[in-house]
Amino acid sequence: MGVLSDLDWHDLKDERWNAYSQATYISSFKDRFSAAYTNLNGTPNSLRPNAERSFTATFTSYIGLKTWMGGEFYLAPEMISETPLSGLKGIGGSIQNFELQKNGSASSTWYLSRAFYTQTLSLGGKSSEVDSSALQLAGAVESRRFIVTAGHLSVIDIFDKNIYAGDLRHQFLNMAFMTNAAYDFAADARGYSWGMVGEYYFDNWAFRFGRFATPKSPNDEPLNFDIFNFYGDQAELEHKHILKGQPGALKVLVYRNRERSGAFSDAITAFQVDPNKNATTCTAFNYGSDNASAPDLCWARKPNIKIGVGFNLEQSITQDIGVFFRGMYSDGKTEVYSYTSSDRSISFGAAMKGLRWGRKKDTLGLGYAQSWISSRHVTYLNMGGIDGFIGDGKINYKPEQVVDIYYQCHVINSVWMSLDYQHLANPAYNSDRGPVDIYGARVHLEF
Image (tube, rainbow, N blue to C red; front, side, top):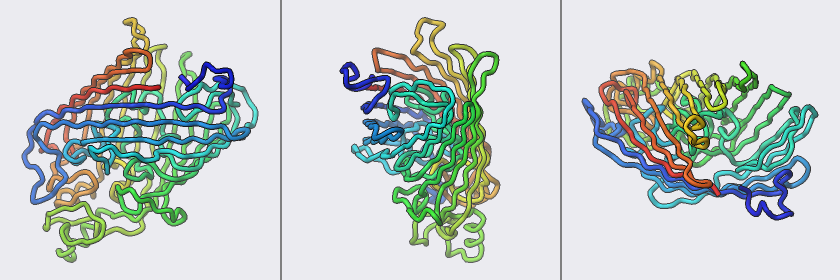
């Protein structure tokens, strides 16, 4: 509920401001699994085969303020404390906990997750009410409108959203269901960036275009604000429909990044021409491999283009059952720069509300996701190379696969508890290792 929503000067039908907060704790346990080798020849990015525990704890406050007609400003300070499995290494497109960040620690860290402004220009059409929620002021919107959003936020706050797989504080825990795993969207090590988005809504159609700043170095926190030379662009077309009386939506997403990244083939060539250009000798940005017999992306970084195209489908089947599908193909020429080590990906599944067993605020979800990497990515890894997340020293390539099953129980008011099971096959695309069973529990509060 909105803060002080019972007072007359806070109108929940036409909010001038609101304030929400959330707190989420996720605990994960990875069972022991078999592995023919781990961190071969000093290659550091294997998932460790021993049993491990991991956790994340986050707290976020969301503050919204209406400035003038159509103008809204949002601010969201956030805290995280975390311990990942194996230092967040050894899993490609199916990292087991979506909250994990690349530079987090067990100590509490505060930062500003979002600070952005939106301006809406109404263009007519049908009017509908928008409910009060985090990062959304209650009011009325017209079906034909143009919205400009600018500031600090996450690309996936706006793009590639799906009502059945995306709000992972209520849904699946695995990162493969937060967005397309192969969507290497511009973001710092925490998942946020500075940028601008324009959205045009015309009844059941919507078109979005956005440009965001990319990191100065892959998977790092400092951003490069030279956005005319280095940037992440994305465009999305959405159509909402009714199928046999049930609502659904289809989205097509294209992204194009220009970043100072390393191409796998260039890294291999540099090493073959001069073996001294290996993983241990580069003094520029690198991932700390001790494998002197392996190529390294450090020697290949230059301005490169990365592109991808994806699809996103959500469809209600009945009042309490919905299904989803995502799929994306990225070119696979260059290293992962901001998201997961995946060059192609699919995910699909279903969610069921607990209406049939008298628990209408509970949810049962079942999802499957699979990721692939390109042939040149495989060759690079098989020579002992690593990227930001994976590299066992060699590879017996197979697609990485995960099944994620969760049950979310509504406890009281704004408190939910969830149990989650994940079965991960071919971690880091390597059939010489795994499969891995991961058990999770989540407590989520909203106020």
